[in-house]
Image (cartoon, rainbow, N blue to C red; front, side):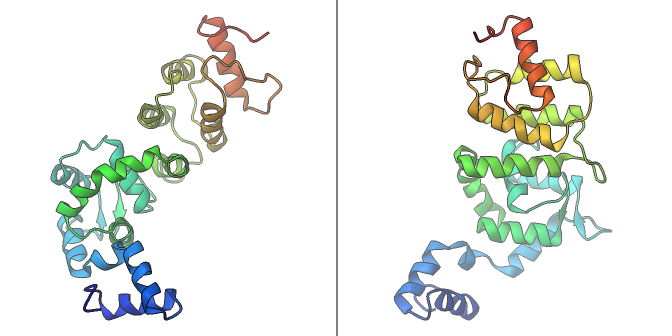
Length: 235
């Protein structure tokens, strides 16, 4: 404990995780540094700084202040990554449990430390597995409470944000197609399948199989691309 500066609770957790081997406990401790660097009092002070005066919740005003303190735009995708770490259930809202747990997950207990983490949080989007998790999280996070589908306007905004990171060259055509031909809310199945389409089908659609089990909306999108001369029909 003296060497690492860990609390007795953290030290015991590390020892238990290593089957009570001291050397192994050091490995556990240093492979999970976030356990040691968060201070509960500091986290509570941060939460109280941003929460509503008359509700035990951080809402739009508090999140705007958080963004200002972090010097990031509220529309910056890093706020989505932070919300993913917090397991936030709704856009522009953090419960006490979500906020505290999320900062502990990231391993910070001050705005200064969170600012320092922003580059590594952005870098998580380059990891395929984490991008998939963040992408799937975004659907539930962005939809309105009580709704099963995501409004088209919100879905387009989220897709433009997410695929800007992946540089999908067909994103603008996809958004145009939805506005011209679909103009309805987006289901979870369409949301999930689009990521599979982006990951597996090349932008020229040379490996697209018309007999594949894609949702009808994606099949219609392919036809839209062919009709508008964006791609050629595969022979």
